[in-house]
Amino acid sequence: MAKSAQHLDRKETARLARQQVPRSSHTEIGNTQRDPVRLLKENSAGRVPALVPLRYGRMLASPFTFFRGSAILQAHDLATTPNSGFTLQICGDCHLSNFGGFATPERSLIFDLNDFDETALGPWEWDLKRLVASFVVAARHLGHSDQAARSLVRDVVLSYQEQTTRYAEMSILDIWHEQITFESIAAQARTKEGKELVLRAIERASKRTHEDLLPKLADQIDDHWQIRDTPPSVFHIQGRNTLFSQDDDWMGVGDWLKVIRPVYRNYRKSLPSERSAVLDNFEIQDVAFKVVGVGSVGTRCLVMLLTDTHNTPLFLQFKEATTSVISRYFEAPVPKHDGQRVVEGQRLMQAATDAFLGWTAGPLGRPLYGRQLRDMKISADLELMKYEVLRGYARLCGRVLSRAHAKAGGQAIEISTYMGSSDRFAAALETYAIAYADQVEKDYDVFRQACRNGKLQARTDADMAADISLT
Image 1 (cartoon, rainbow, N blue to C red):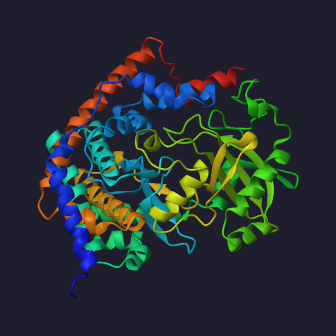
Image 2 (cartoon, one colour):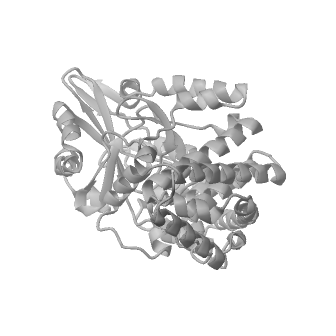
Image 3 (cartoon, rainbow, N blue to C red):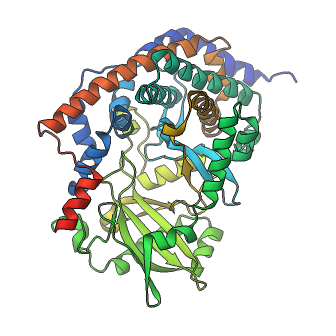
């Protein structure tokens, strides 16, 4: 079929962009003359003070966990690097551990991006550069050579490039309908080990249901369910195990079950009407605070347990949405509500979203977004991956990111044309990823020294749990 004039014009725009911003310019890692400790402290502002040391303790485990928790540093650095000029909704924290499996509303298990706390309008290259850097940092952590790490970067970029070229020839409706299921991943696996890992993941996901979670997280007291305190991970805000200080504004809001009801009502208004109607069948049983992730530790996060008349549980998670690190360093319209930003970004980028994904404002106005907790959600265990399986995972992540960008931005034609058909863009990102991984290790050393000399306080989960058990 002959291409339309508009299609040809879009390709020409991309070719001009490539002349103005050559692919070779993407080797630059940006302005790294900054104090990583200062930026991390800035990023910790507003978090629960007692949990900030836990955030640093989790980041201290390795350069890779440090990288996961320091998205603000790379966003700062990327702001001074060249970009093609094509912007769209990006993930904002696109490292290899922010991909995983989860159930669609129809209960199919798909693989996709699964963390959108930092989603915002930004250059598509920023996502890809964070992803390839994460593979180099992780590869070094796993003991692989830089030559092996370079191959992983090439796998990511060429997969992204190949898939974007394919999406450039597809209608936007076909792109919106495409899902990457675990069954298709297993069928296309290049190694026996890779296929076995996928099949085991499917089996594991099938057991990660609300019914399975209920006895692990809650106790039945008479006819009522109560979430079990397991500090520092889970605790009641006003209970004896709380990690909130007495002067925290959330400590003075009153009866939490009463306070949470208007928060819950406003959340339901953000859902499609049929999803909200499902929740008519559930009653709130309890609400507690939950510590999540690495980069999110210390942000406000609530777990709500609901049950229906059959005592079937539903766990919802309401997580604080703070200003995106992308928005700090890339000029774009400022969202009115960061919870809405996360939800709408996720709906744009994912092939299918959680049935109960919505937003609200928490007590005293902090923006929150809500979704199901853990329902059939699984993530890759890097420590168990042989190198060839890791290469397959790299190709898969490149493919998923390409689909997310093509769906969210509708600019597959421009991005594909900009990258071209050669491996020049991949070669540039190989150089970038190795150089940026070197920078991550330098920043990690500065961070580790700051923890040692007392500029930052770092505590492990075990340390904090032991402290709590002695009080």
